[in-house]
Length: 339
Image 1 (cartoon, rainbow, N blue to C red):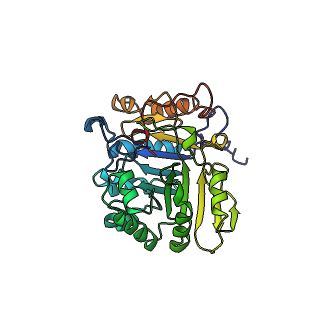
Image 2 (cartoon, rainbow, N blue to C red):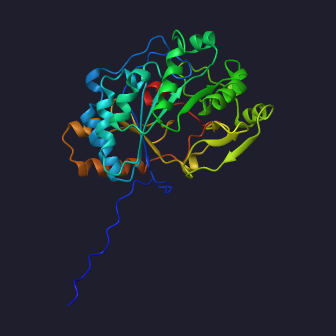
Image 3 (cartoon, rainbow, N blue to C red):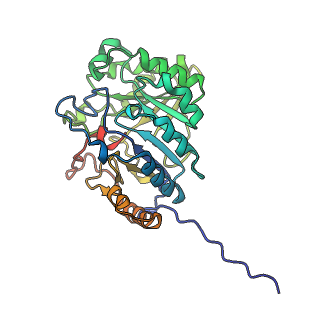
């Protein structure tokens, strides 16, 4: 008699009630930052999480492993400023070894990435995104409270040398602050052959300076760019990719537009967030956080944690509701949530 074949068991995938599969996990490793950008946090009155409340690297590795078992293929390390967490390269090495993980990225302000980039590359880091909101020294200093951007530029240069590509530069555009630099950043993208991503100002700043009038929309950015460049749309690699991309006329460099306010992309969202103090956030603008740290420290098994993550993702919101009459900003700003 022929052997009876066992039925094929399909892996459990992390899906929400709108049938969106979660494949991207953003892990904040610290709520601290050495920059003081007002759209992210305020320099005054900040209360940082106590060290014992932060997830250890072993806890992060364990939770990331469970997420990967559930179908997550991309992990991004964020903060605050993640490079303020000591020996972060060790965590990167542990995560890059997870079977099934395809992409390990880092978002940083670049203040000392140039000194550690080789170690991150050796640890298995795939890509890096570096924040830079102005190409004018005085304005950069005013926005960030950091002396100058030479360290940031050096970090971008090293990232390109190490082929941590595509190297992306994030610029939060704010009307009346840096919206006169759109063409400068496009030239920068062309000269350096990298991708500059313009991000709309979002209502998640701790000082509550956000107003819709200060948002520079994608349509306005494109109109400005077309004064000097021919833009060729680039197809999204996946439906859940957040940025609209364009090649620029020089043939080198790209522009990306991330437009959560004027053109929300919630319908294809594939993200979940893990905060530095062990809370699961199903949306950047969630009003509810789900504590996985205390469950883990109370002795929950991997199977119990897996069930908790599955049930948590089922509560994921349909969208963020920016601009709707009932919109409420989350209680924690970007620096605490993780960018």
